[in-house]
Picture 1 (tube, helix red, strand yellow):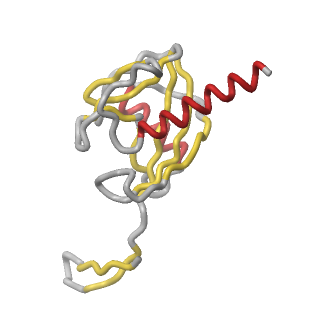
Picture 2: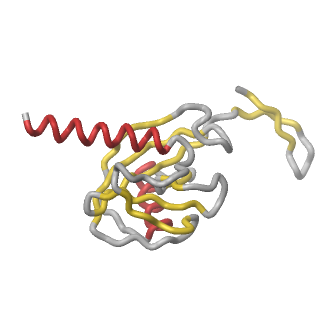
Picture 3: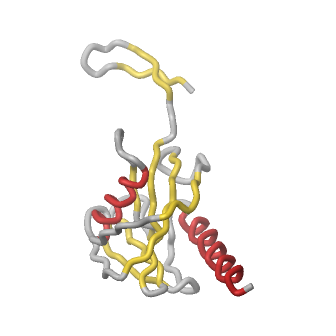
Length: 153
């Protein structure tokens, strides 16, 4: 989809493609609990730590940087989980997220866009959970349970 934009300096009208914005999120488990952040900025609520991928940055690097900025946790290893791309997943604009998973033993400390951090049991998640993060967490928890069941067979 092309959109017309006006140069703020010269007033020239040009067209550019309107594309989704890429993001990266990280589901971190600490001692069997899921790490979430309470957002400082709209939309307000609890979320999986993450953020936008900058130009020239890989999704993996963005995920590691965002988790460090928002929770103080340094991860050395993450595994890609899934990609989510519903046009309405973020009320601010169309985004596509690459979701990663990781384990940590570090204790999170709120920073950057996080008002606070919390560690939650899978059956006691906070509310509200923003964006499509409840769906992402549900998919993750089902996947995690399926993997454990597969191992027992």
